[in-house]
Image (cartoon, rainbow, N blue to C red):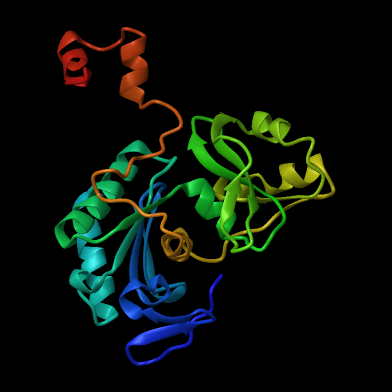
Length: 266
């Protein structure tokens, strides 16, 4: 990773001067996570956290989210126009929550003509317990299931997926990585099942995250944007892993004809 020294208008690395405008390590980044039962928002300058908040979900999440973002930015002496990069958790997680957060982030990016970086909840969970050789991220999928994915890390500390994200029972998720010797587990599902994980192998461990997920989303978004891995609002997509409840019922013929028509692609 490049190390930048601060100047007035430019930043200097080993290769010469870098225009401050194109240095993500000095960008103001707003990160949003609405993938679970907790809403978290963070504002950072590059990988350095400025401020973050968390709040429990209520029925007015979509209305409350903007007020929380506005309040957080105001506390940091900023407005939405000061944000250089938007980042958001793209899932997997709760469908309704994801749609609220992604819609908000895409709306902000589109209105301000700024880039956006999507970070999965599994990536963020793995990143939150860095450094590590290998991390199995486990995120609550409800209905007795978990989302799981195995990660290693590259030289810049960015998670690299070793397999595709999967939704399964908790036991099946552990069976999937049973061949791994030393392994660190992270994520809310790992926190909830810490004793069961340790019981499976004396070389398996669980590291709990001591801060909100939006903080990790902001830092990881900075690292990714520094290597050109960003999106435009219109290209960002959610990572659902499994179909929504309505889509499942549709495939089983359990929805009325009017609802079926509304779900058909146009």
